[in-house]
Length: 351
Image (cartoon, rainbow, N blue to C red; front, side, top):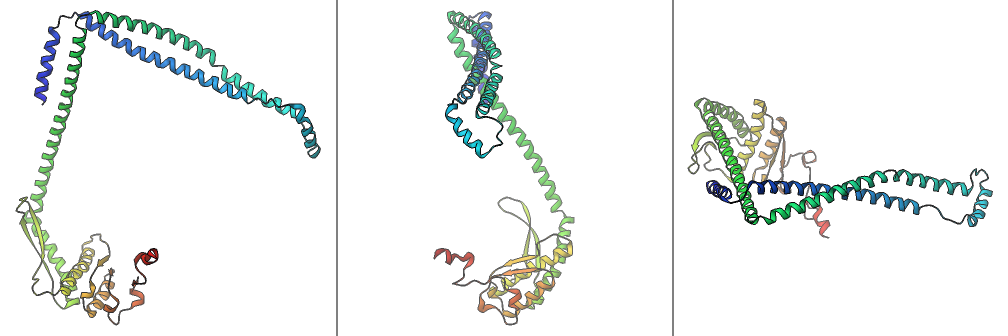
């Protein structure tokens, strides 16, 4: 698209050079454009000054309309009655009205100071505007007399549009090239990371960490279930993306009941908190788990004691009849729900 646009620009440039138009046309066209710009500025200046004068005049009318024109004779009796109740009144009602009106006249006089200067500026700006209007009209008439003026205008507009398209294509191509260069840098960084992550040295480090984790994992599972759970790790390659990854898996999952399988997950979570503390890894010291009704009562008691020793909080949702005897309900149960007392009190809202 860029190449085609460049060919169009070259063809239009050649066509413009072949037109039998003197240099005077181009200079006149530039002069007309400059005159139109100056005309626009002068018109804006005149409008601005006239608006300023109009605002001041409007403010003057509003202030002068606020001058009190009350009948003083009618209010004198009212003022005398007020003076009987407040004998310390030092000013007459006429004085107050006169002071009020004097303040208004002073404000009007202050606001009116700028009007002569604004009117002079408006007159000068209007004169300059009239000159520019005449110059613009004369230039337009001169250009209209040239036989190829319309052809030049169309050609210039078309050439300008092609130049705009050319600029857009160049910007897009530049952005694409920058993105491609950045992607190449990222790919190189990823390749370097993969070489480091899947190097024999790093693989050995991962396996050492797995051994250290399995110490805690087997300890927790042995205490809870009397069996030893462990995880293993292998490096595999994804068939679709052809990328390598570490595959962590539980060792020997044969003949596990549903409750034991959920217990294995819980044992893993508890073991990881203990492992993170051993390694100095920051982690949250609470565990959210579900479906604990699949575990036996003695296992729930054991896990309750275990998480307490490792400074961890275990949050579970369980049915009332699945709670084992010997569990300290007062200190362990945080929230009770039932058909009459549902979460967020939805039964009260529906009623």
